[in-house]
Image (cartoon, rainbow, N blue to C red; front, side, top):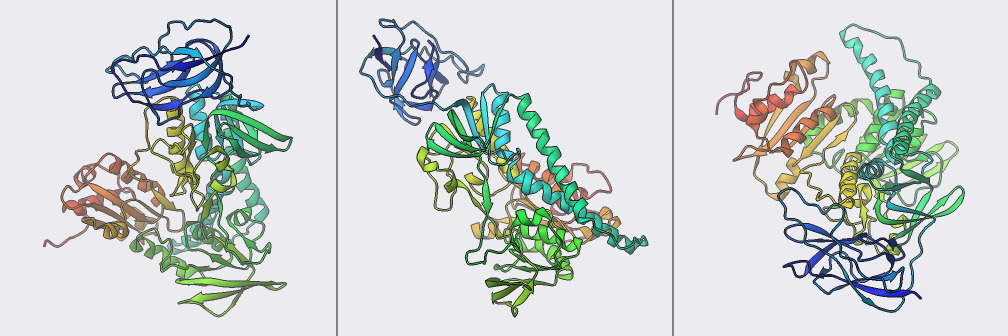
Length: 590
């Protein structure tokens, strides 16, 4: 005869209305005596409430966020043996204690008899942690969770790991940008007396090399997954309920149940409605495929993706035009950072149309006839290719998140708290799908946080800034507060700008058009933000990110000895400008 029991919270000491932080079991789970059922958190310690005896979880009566006290009903348990008595137990596993925390009080649960309740089915594969999406955020979350002792299933729609970033985004674009830089530098070498012949571009070989770079990295990820015993399922996953995902694979539907889930499903290229369905209208994925080098191409969107592709295709010989509906390129950056880039692009592109948009496109055998509207709208123009690079949209509405009870906003983002939890406490979201900015390094950082929270660590997202980089020529990078944001928010700041025309290293590179700018607090002189434009700006910005995280002021930076001659010195020189100690420029005394 089967016996059902109620498990209630025992005496946990001098605590009332204790918040439930996490539920560790699901209906249908088999538990042993002392298996942790849930985690409570007082102002002194975290504590796990263990099962008083072995059995099957039939119903859970609390949820994360509830506040419970002695006698509160926790779960309904089907005991394995009739008449089994609850044994005296103590908390097991990691309670989150540190050496200076008091031990968690005993949390032995009490039981009483109840009626039967229905069981929730488990999937073909069960995971302690299921990760949906294997981009930089997803594989980081999966690998970190595995390193912390969790059994992990990683679900990826592509046939290889790495997601959009590695396969059709960050990595292949940087490979092509490296090739473009080689072509550009060979041309610029004539300025100092070195001349090369006209380069011959083997598009097929260039494409193969780019794909080999991607392949090397994806194989590396597969190796890391095997080393960590992470189970990888290739297919498109969608939620069925809060503890089950269906994955459409090449071998049919597979069901994955889980204790915790990390959603890392990323984003997709945004499209402009009304454009004709024509293979000559491409997105960034099509541009990176490098099917051919068109004679004339229009890029819709003057953001980072569009300008990076402009840099690549211009170097390969395509005549480029750019149309941007805002008043400047890369609207998120300060105007002074964009000026050197805009000036260079103006000499390289056929045209740059600002405050302008495309009203319609007509496709025929001769090409794509594009019609414009706006302040700088030209007459209709014909192009061989049109690249749509107007941003990305989160995939929140493509994974049936509603079936799991997860809140998704109208744009497709999944709101999360500082521990990356969604509205369903055992489900987390990271990366593009969790909100702007849509950057791989943000996703990786969030992935580690989600994995560590699942493993019981007390961590939160507490980064003071997330740097942004446009890998154009010249590169543009910025972090922290921008001047535009400071003025909108009424924040009192000062700035120090060091022109690269005074940098010995920049001059030797024949690239002295750049600048380094530091924003700092008027009173404390602590760094608030930074921006750079010039070669390797994406590498240089990291120093200022660290400075902001460490709360450095201008004197801290100015007294830090930088190697000479380097571009990194420009950060030092900007700080010296702020301090009034610079000798590499003459600044008249006020």
